[in-house]
Length: 92
Image (cartoon, rainbow, N blue to C red; front, side, top):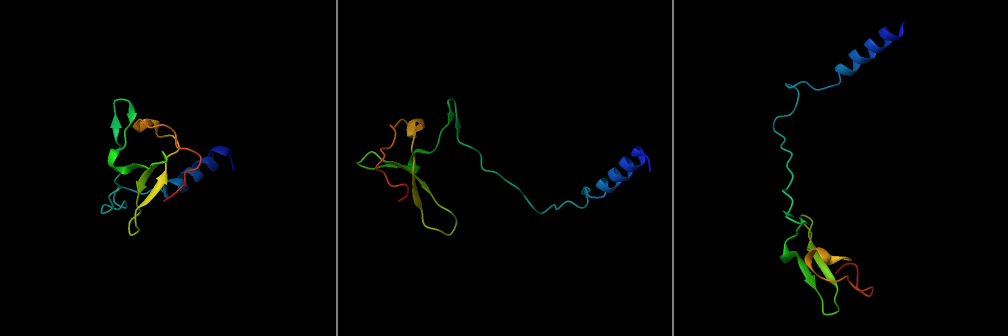
């Protein structure tokens, strides 16, 4: 069997693996939330941040069905705050 025959047979096999327009699901909608973009790059909502009396800055996060958690922000310069000290807990 020549190389061109082998390549043609392999490409015909791959063509059958791709979905046609009729086979693609029409009911699924894949969406992504719009990012918070400002003029200077990434800008997060200010209500999601908390700074403790010790100077530790945390960001609020919550997975569906779970209670909110606060995760330490090591370098919160993007919200105008200094770095968090080493004594901060990683999660609250």
